[in-house]
Every structure is written in C-alpha cells, then in structure tokens.
Image (cartoon, rainbow, N blue to C red; front, side, top):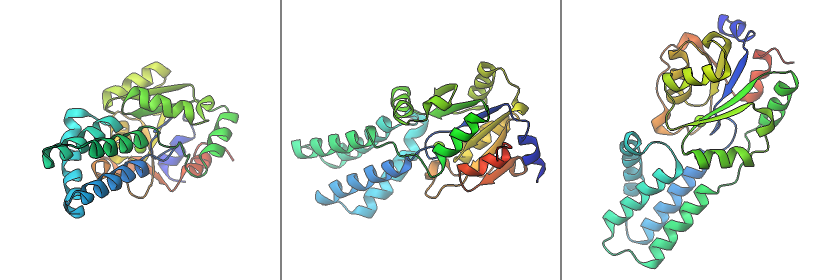
Length: 238
Ligand SMILES: [Mg+2]
C-alpha cells in the first residue's frame, strides 16, 4: 500500500464530485453536440467545422458564463444566430428540443456506484456531494439520483476553487488532512483539493471534457482508480 493509500484510512469525510464520477453527464453534452451538428449540417454547414467551432467557443465562454447546461446551450444558440441571419420556427424548435433533452437527461449512475455508496454508508462513513454548475439543475439531478440518502450534504458551486473547498471543510468541521476528494476532473476536482492539503482520488473516465484535462499539480499526492468500487478498500471497507 502506498503512502497516499495509508493516509486515506484515517479519512473522516469523503467528498464526491457528481457529474461523471457518480452519474453520466458528459454523454448528454456530447449528444447535444451531435444533435446540434446534425441541425447545422441540415442547414448546409460542414459538420467538422461546426464541431470545431463548438469546442473553441466552449472553452472561450467558460470564464464568462461558468459551467452548466444552460450556458452551454446559450453558446450553441449564439453559433446558430451568427451563422443564420433569419431563424425559422424549425430552427428554434430544434434548439429547444436539444436544450430540453440536455436539461432533463436521464439520471444514470456509473457502474458500482450504488453498491459502493451503500456499503460506505453502512460502514458509517461521512459523505458529501460537491459539484459545480447551476444550482437548480445539479440539485434536481441529486434528487433524482436515488442515492441522496447516503449523503450528509450536497454543495453546488459555480466553480471549484481552493476557497470553495476550504468553505466546505469548515461546514463539515474537518481539517484538510481528514478529508478526501474523489472526482474525474484533474482541473476541477483534484488540483483544488491538493492545493489546500486535501487528499485526492482520481477516478479515470474516458471522454473527459477537453476543458477539464490538465496535469496534476502534485502527482505524488493523487491516488488513481478505475472506478468507484476501488474506493472501498481505500476506505477500509471490505
Ligand atoms: Mg465531474
């Protein structure tokens, strides 16, 4: 067992990212992108150029609009408006359908999540959800997830930073060394956690959004796992 893993045995608070750590999320953004690209293709625009434009604009708007489904859809609408002078009812209806599908996407838990959380909860582990985006959308997903009973708290922030992590620790009444952050994003979950002395477990996921991919600030402080069930031995739950 590595030094990091030994430290995790003393964890008093387990903090879970939600999107693409507990449940599917990026999948529905990729579907919205594909639907939008199909719409633009139907209007005569090149699909590869549309995808490329979405990616560029998506990164640009993050610092302005923050994370979330509505800001993402606002970007797609803006691209459409810039490309097409007169929007027809067909185009507006299509955008509305894409938007509604994204905002009300099915809540699908990732493999092993339900069982892992149930066992951690039965073992008396304290658990928080810590997610970013728009509060009403994230809380709606939390309420629909069927796993809310395992968590003491669900915190939603516009952006995960060292400061928001410190506030969360104060809410829970634990020190950084007593907490462990679990998430799929190096940029939003792992680096802000280790930045303030919180242990971190990186859950590898395919297709992690481009904006979330970055190097770990301190690779030696991060334990990498393939899925949520791998948390159980780290937490001393057999
Ligand atoms: Mg995530």
